[in-house]
Image (cartoon, rainbow, N blue to C red; front, side, top):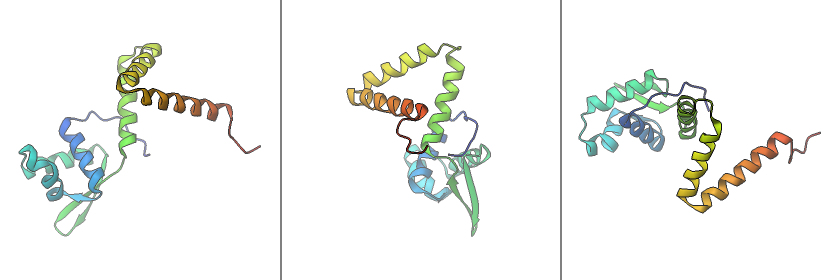
Length: 137
């Protein structure tokens, strides 16, 4: 994952990133066909959105013939991690217990398998920090 500042992304920017992640490299026409038409957006609006994501350093672009082709710089997990980190920093006021409780409550409301996965992830992280499972001396 590339390091980047957690951006403030709007709904259209997130939808555009999702589209680029699904398509891989894409130009304005391809993105417009996938998300612009169903939303009733002009091709210029899609182009502006791609340009904003490029300026935010979330996309790269290269010129192919007469059009730019855009590619994602960051993956979905990277954007999610940075967005959550930014939200927690803004909202928790130094109170980590409330953040953890809210996260566990969210997992419990989603379904029991998510709680079990959370437990597995925590155990794996604890094991990694204590050196469990390391075969190296």
